[in-house]
Image (cartoon, rainbow, N blue to C red; front, side, top):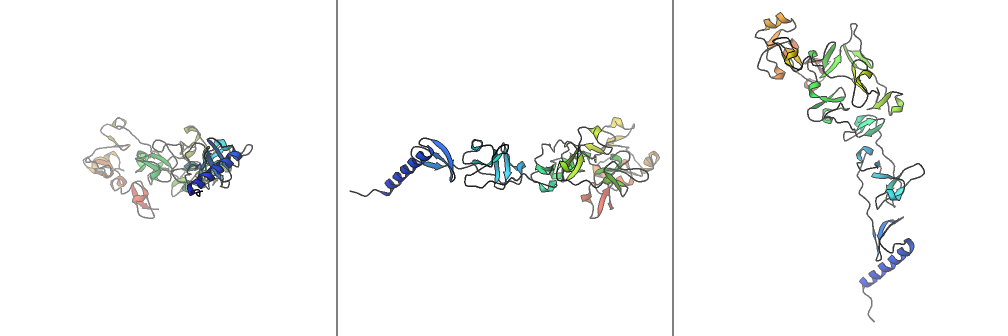
Length: 348
């Protein structure tokens, strides 16, 4: 009698294994089951491993895009109440009464949640912001709204980071005349002037004759800020739902908090708002001229008659000394230790 071939022996072992598994787990037909070694698809011939989904690496929940997914030290996975909530290849671990579990491979330990704790926006990535001590993907559209920011790159084409919020580039100032009464332009941001009887808005202090943001309550969560306040980017802010709820010099952002209003206030938007013969250029009424004497007879502050360099005009207009010799628009245009004040680089 001939000896059985190796392939025949393997087939016989597979049938025995299938029979044993079928007796133990009941998978005598197409069935899915899991044990401590893994998850399997079984039929009348044998069983094959069920491969679980590939997990995406993450630093916080905001980076897990799947429905109901959360971030753990193992990567993005799904929250669950029982095994039926998990994709095939995973089982639900850690679920209990009123406590959600997490989907893992049967051979893996219960993972540690990694929600994305933070102290400030710099602790977050992918444009997320630190809100209530957790990195959260912002629903704010930086192309159209005043979303929180720390750099222009977070605001999109044609938008800039102005006083901590995304704004249209046209809302940056270059000269004091673009900011409105009682305000000055420092590093492209309109600030309230102070000193000599002029005080600062609530939450700001007078520094070098300009109001700047004062010390803010540091926070790790909304609870640390108290009622009516919100923890955003590591600082407490007053909550708001409309412009009338914020103090003078502040405005209600799209994130629902009162923040410094660094936007400029154009004096005009078209020529009809200017005196006869003047033109509205970059939010300011400008008088065309032929000589500097014409300008002085209008206002002694306008000592120059020349094309406006930063607007590249060919026509000549009356300008102040600062406007005529302007060499900056933002602090980055100046040397270290200088600021761009009223269009001119000055030492801090």
